[in-house]
Length: 286
Image (tube, rainbow, N blue to C red; front, top):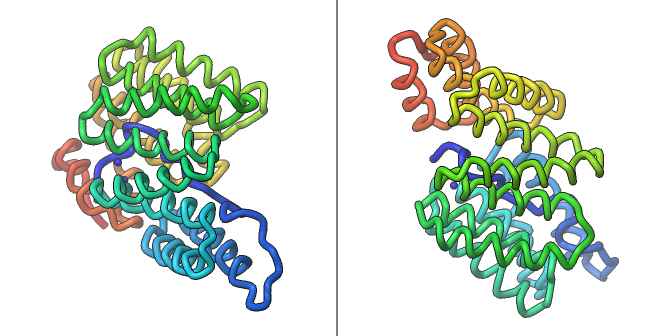
């Protein structure tokens, strides 16, 4: 996925402290790698992909110097996520596959599940739905060995995405509801927002406009509170399409203009151009 629109899944970025607990050494390279990766993660959250990519690449170089395999796998996953956001699916797949090989060798159950989720989104972005479903099913087998939490919710969401892409909306909803139940139990507000956005998108596909609007507006409100740029993009995208489906061009332009500004701020020229075409002559650049 990531320029394609982020409609196919949520990338599993390995975040703060992902390179493993820092240990004091003579030169502090492990600590440096963790700090670099964490800085990259913060840039990622802000949609500053070039800066994030630079930090992840620096962290990878440091981890390779000290042969820290878990850190290497984490950095590769994050670089793959950046490549996917930038539309380079071939590079993203290469990064995820290398990370997965390391995690299999390390016997890292959670890491394997994370990377399989990421790899599945690459397959799905390419229309390889059977391969995507296979990756998610294997990820599910791994997450079920762990306490229920965000990783299981993410995997269920991706399975729902495949079902929705195949037109199996009832099955998709069931996966999303299962994920939402985990979010609610864990009081995971960001997770709930992700699931609301997916449920809104499913309702939109079924022409259930009232329900779609409710879910999407709730998701947008929460993503804005969290300053989650990617989530804001997804929710605004859904609300724009909902307004167009209802024939409300004025509301579509309101949401679409907000989305357009974000695309322009993030340097997503292809997405901005597609949105302007979708909205027609009513969408203007700065």
